Length: 112
View 1 (cartoon, one colour):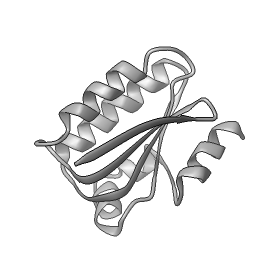
View 2 (spheres, helix red, strand yellow; view 1 turned 180 degrees about the vertical axis):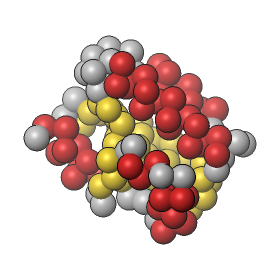
View 3 (spheres, helix red, strand yellow; view 1 turned 60 degrees about the vertical axis):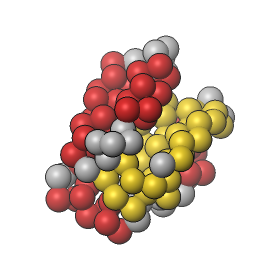
């Protein structure tokens, strides 16, 4: 798994590639904990390079969004491949997270 963290327009962006599962989730959990500290805690998780996601990854993202909302922010997802989108739809998490086709659209969503 590869993780790249950047900041664009005051939005923290995490790009992930590879599998996002129990074996690779710890660095992402740690990054979210360290990143979501001060309001507004706006984060985009770019899953363009992720083809597999498991329940551990989902739990980490749910914990992250709860923490972000406590800090007057939000987590938005973008670039979902079909297998990842299906998991989010089956778990109804597509109703919890705002999902955008591209990273730029997700970032722009914070300014509107």
